[in-house]
Length: 403
Image 1 (cartoon, one colour):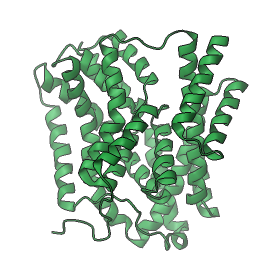
Image 2 (image 1 turned 90 degrees about the vertical axis):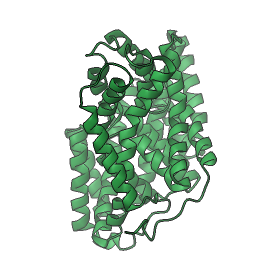
Image 3 (image 1 turned 180 degrees about the horizontal axis):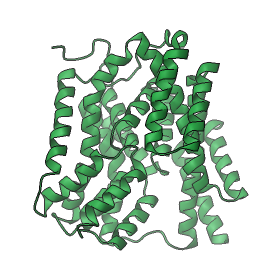
Image 4 (image 1 turned 180 degrees about the vertical axis):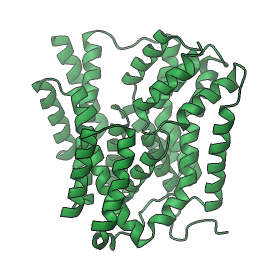
């Protein structure tokens, strides 16, 4: 049995390098999973060239198909492609640790942002998300929708998601994009090559990872006494059965920890509010829940158990899918389908730019002006995203103080 895909590139960096970059992103990536994808594109496609736009869109499309937190899976795959398995672990750790530490501290009673200045700063961070996602849509549309067929696929995806919405509609839109690509994008697909930075995972390893995912999922439904095992099982089920990631996981988490009485409804809502103010993945709310839960070890140990449990299924299923994904997309027909999928991903991001990113942040003409300033800083002046975060958060705080 072959142990790797023959045309997959080998890792070209070190885990320490990957950790450093993702830790900085973990400290500055506000705005939820859609904004995270924009931050990642700016950092790894535009600035560092670790992966190209088409390869990045491929990863985004794959992770939208899989259960788990899509932005964290994309980050893990980028780290994996850069520095192997240790690189993937370094990417996940660097991106997740800042928010996990903050939310664990909140479980111990750390204060939240309060008052006009604090609420204004949080609103400024929402406006950062508008600018980041708009930049991602613009850049990806230029490279992935350069002709009429692909622009039409992207526009159709935008219309579909605007009318229907939801994770099931998202999956259906990506599938429709693949079919449209097969029909309309074959000439364009001839020039599509294997993507730089595609992670190398052997098929044998992929089968083992998929087996681990399903075995742990089956075990999570087995009766377990209260304690660390029960906490792990509940959080693993939540991570394994959610598609779309982000806010979609919250109802599952509530059923997992509030219904059995491990965390009160008020505490759960307080943790959700704190997660909105934290950078990094929303799945890091699990650290708060594990630390505050009335079952398991509680505290830092409980946070670690819950954090590993909710992220593990998404990473296992990603590692299991990657080697087969690479083999499938190497074929001409598959490349045509991926051209359509890439265009559909642009439409999905464009729809998300309006709802929930725009509708949740832009409420006044001044909000629009600040979002436009952030967009110009990113696109025209090439300002690092962390500086744009600081500028708009400060502007929001000042506006809040001014009433």
